[in-house]
Image (cartoon, rainbow over all chains, first blue to last red; front, side, top):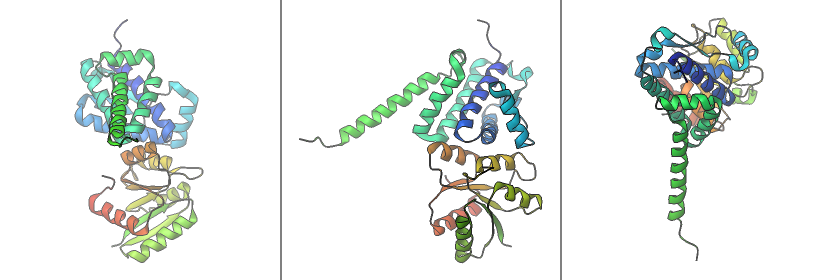
Length: 163
Length: 129
């Protein structure tokens, strides 16, 4: 399989973030969330300035566009002349940072549930692609499950046995 | 000069309670209540720019999520600070609410606590950590 360009990968990843966040709040608020998270990511990874969230001059027009294009609606514009020249591992780090920020704000339980839905929306192909860039979402999911199990076990151990 | 606070909540009891309650606790703020996102934008369009908006989420027609997004997509209003004041207590709403606003306060709340949080906001620029 030919290596996918960074621009194409980032577009797909951002769209998946947008789809999942939309179901938790609203599509317009998901637009705002992506915008803020992109600004945060830009501080750490300068090349992310090449990823712009689409303009939302009128919320009604924006919502109409989403309805019209459904899953083909793109939440970001990616300027590929810069981004496609960046090393894929570094782009992977930026994606990881973005995902970690979402999880940090959501906390353990909601963060875990978000991750599952995000993995699902991203699809097998793109999960494999970003894994190759160092973003192993299934491993993150597993880590969450292990830490939850450990917490459960330590709770069980701290309870006095009933004789 | 008094700080202007706009409360946006479709529940008229909440509007009245917050307005009267806060005014009883302090005379530092000028509070104005509106019962929909539509009325909030009508006031903003008339150049009534508040120093803070207390925003409910679950409202008919335009919900609080969309009100905030519309504020942030407009150059004249994008800097108006917003604190969510809502009965939505799930982790997703809280997490994404805190990420995109200056604070997230859940109902029910005590008026003294609300007043403290508002004071905290004007001192620090945000609440919720």
